[in-house]
Length: 315
Image (cartoon, rainbow, N blue to C red; front, side, top):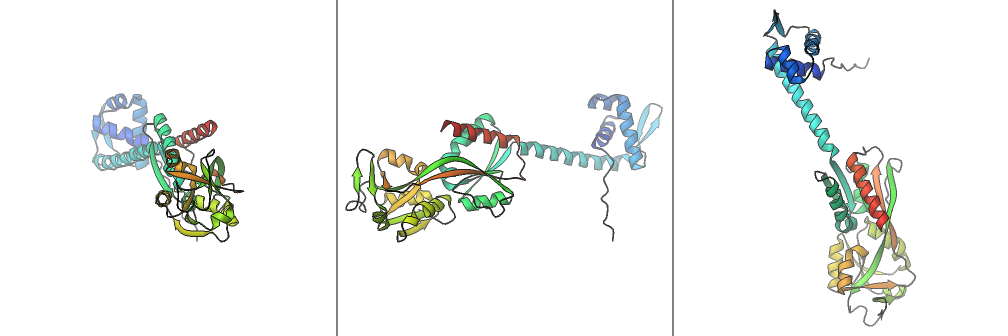
C-alpha cells in the first residue's frame, strides 16, 4: 500500500492578504496603497488566487471590481488563516525572548538570582521559566527537552550521554558545620581561633549525628563520594530534601550539617554557625552547565551563557 502524499497548498499568504485588502477597500488601487505594493503586483496576486481557487472572486466591470458571490465565504476563511498566521508569528517572537532554566537547589536559591538580575538588565522583557529541584530531577527534565539549559551540582548522570552536552562551569566547596558552641563539639573538638573553625578527625566526625541532603542531589553525591566513604560507620540521622531545613536544624543543635558554602555564608559571617574542618577531607566540587544537543540555542540562550561566562571570569 502506497503511503499517502501530503498535499501542500499552493495558495500563499500574500495572495490572501491582497484579496482581503481588495475586499475591504473595494479596489486594487486602494489596496496597493494600503499594502505598499504596485497596482500591477496587487492585480497579479488576485489573478493568481482566482486561478488557484478555480473561481472568480470579483467581477470586472470596466475599471470597477464588483464582489462575486464567491468572495464573502473566501473572505471569511482568508481572515481566519491570516489571523492564525499572525498568532504563529507572535508566538515565535515571544519564544525568542523566552528561556526555560533549570537549577539544582543550592544554585537555584543562592547563585542564580544575581545571574537573572543581569539577564533582566540586558533584556527587560525576558520571559524566564524556572525549574528548581535536585540535580537528577533537573537533568531528567533536560533529557525530556523541557529545559533550555540547566546549572547543576555534582556530575550530571544523563541516561543518554550522546544527547546531552555538559560543560564544567565553576567550583564550589562544601562545608561541614555546626552551631556555635554546639553541645556535640564541647568535649570532642578543639576550636581554632585563627581560622574560626573547629577541627575534627574522620573518626571523631563519624561518632557525631550528621544531617545530609537526600539521594539524587548534587550535594549528596559529593558527600557520598568525598566524605562518607571515609566514614563507613557515620551516624546519619536524617536525609533531607531542603538545604534550608538542614541549616535550621543545625542551628537548633540537632546535629552537624554539610552544605555548600553559599548556603551558610550569612550565618558564618554572623557567627551563628561555625565551620568544622575535617582532617584529610577535600569537599570541593565542580558545578556544571547542561543542555540537550537538540535544543534550539536562541539569542536569549546565548545572552544567558555570556552572563554565566562573564561571572565565571570574575570569580
